[in-house]
Length: 283
Image (tube, rainbow, N blue to C red):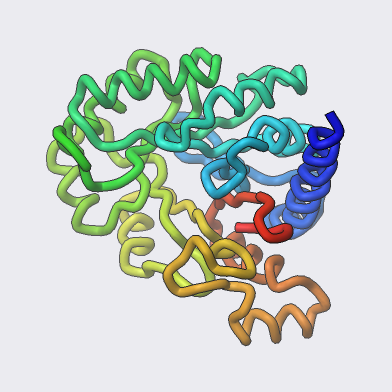
């Protein structure tokens, strides 16, 4: 149908714009060239691409196309979560490219719960993604919204890793005290990654320093805080920060490029999203 062709065309422009805008800045920051996006080692021989396509910030029905276009443009990292409910669409997007899922890097996140619930969520993720295993599984939040505990959920991740369902395990949105509390009961330590909100406008320096001290990688989400409208951060859009705009103008680049370069220059990988909503926006 005509509407499908229009959606795909718009999606192509957005996904390719994002990838090729990021590629020179990510690669040049670490390799001095634009040959490829580098990766960061996160333990046990696992390497996480410095940029992943996040699927949880408004792509919704276009996730399959966005995934396919991201892969077609050369992207390898895909970042999803159990609560996003988009695993099937990601699987469809991957299949449409003919690219083996094993050649990609898939990160997923599960909610805190009981051991049984958490392990079931891990298996559900894998089944819906149509893969035998994922590369990185994170506890999405340090709070349980029903029964269970962080300790139980972490034990489920540990067992999933031992069973070969995930290559690495980690955390998301954990602060210093929550990390230290989990360390008391964890068998596998340290976590590979702590994925948190990180941008020019917001950075939890205390938690970042603590993660660095413990050997936990610190990964950014919401690096642009929802683009122009600042929809994904309480402190508003990164793109409207005067200093960011000034530096961008001085170097004849976009404010988004300055904000992303600020993160990768610190050696922090990131997940970012693209979508349609009142125009073309980036997160």
